[in-house]
Length: 67
Image 1 (spheres, rainbow, N blue to C red):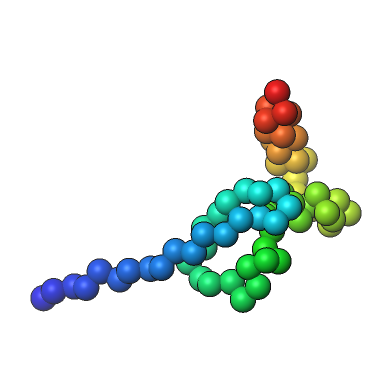
Image 2 (cartoon, one colour):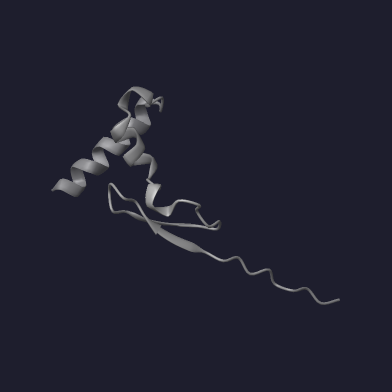
């Protein structure tokens, strides 16, 4: 019995706000409007419902990048 390997097409996009690149397996209908989760929470801080430890990790990563 032979099995065919299913090939998934990978689409690469770039966040319009942060410039960060990311990959998806589905084609985006509006690639110019895509943004990362980090960029979304920067734009909408009132909607940030992540746990405090996650917020602290993100803050530490941002500080490391600035250095």
